[in-house]
Image 1: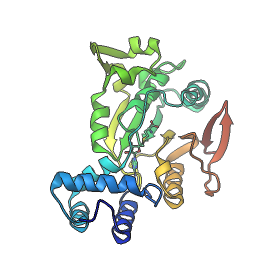
Image 2: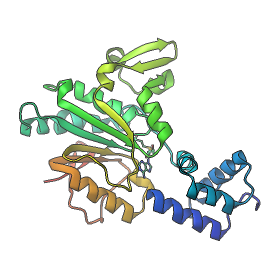
Image 3: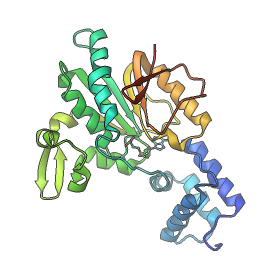
Length: 271
Ligand SMILES: C[S@@+](CC[C@H](N)C(=O)[O-])C[C@H]1O[C@@H](n2cnc3c(N)ncnc32)[C@H](O)[C@@H]1O
């Protein structure tokens, strides 16, 4: 094994493989992050040669999943970029309610949901919106990291993770399990179905009204962003909405989405 550095050929091999399997593009700027993940996984498995590890991840589904757990960052928090939740409550949900028929559900997809905080924040915001009841909402929340999906489904969080939850929601939507653990109440959980999904593949749901895909596309190159965003467009209903992260943009990608800047929140609409 080299002195913990991938040579150019090894880097290209992994870079191409990761891109093919996930749409995530590593480049020379974040090369050392990739390197350190690969070498620590090799060490864990007692593998000495980079190519042997490559053969393992490219042929074994469990090792591939474990590899993705490591190279993706699941950084998240409750009500991250809170202006998006304000827009959801004050503009997006009311405008959808106006065009929905009685009994229709609003379908939301939280794509790249990490450990669940974003999906639960969406669910709580829906429950706090005027004229919305539990039966009006269905949320699908998916991620490439199986481990994250398991944590999300469990819905139990350490007290440090609760800092960004408004006090009033903490009381209303969480059960205190112990001094340092909180569990999401059933009324919130019941709105969400968590599942594994890799965004480079088609999603099996249609007629979605709102997609949250925030701080996920940041890891993709332009081509994968365009492919993913065009798929979003196809499965969204007319008058549907797409939220992306505030550091992300569809500018110059030639998508059919219309850009709307509402109170400093960037959202895209299908019209
Ligand atoms: C930085 S977190 C963002 C979490 C959440 N959306 C938020 O804004 O707080 C990025 C998430 O995207 C997921 N991800 C990365 N590539 C993905 C892909 N190809 N398909 C699905 N999820 C992916 C990662 O596993 C990670 O959980």
